Length: 105
Image 1 (cartoon, helix red, strand yellow):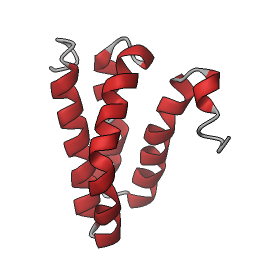
Image 2 (spheres, rainbow, N blue to C red):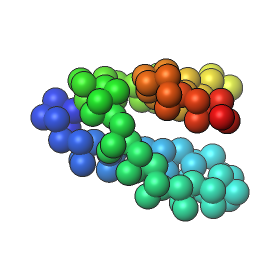
Image 3 (tube, helix red, strand yellow):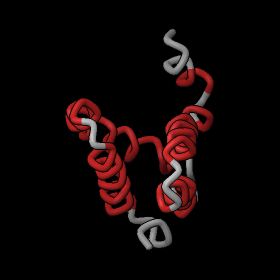
């Protein structure tokens, strides 16, 4: 619904909560410890980049569906693949000059 109304603030809140819950569900204290300090930085990054990279904010929400499906079917190996694809998707949407960050340049 937030994507349909171009409500980036609400969409980002749900996006961040979704990822936080995955960290919780993983049962990994280390993953959660790493996620929590990154939360605010990632939130700012998403607010800044997603409206340009994803003109249709519904697409942002829909990009979580493959992760949900793998979790729903208790397929952790496929969930890990879906999460990796989800994380890397934004890099493919950024301009080449920004994409150098991904490559460690």
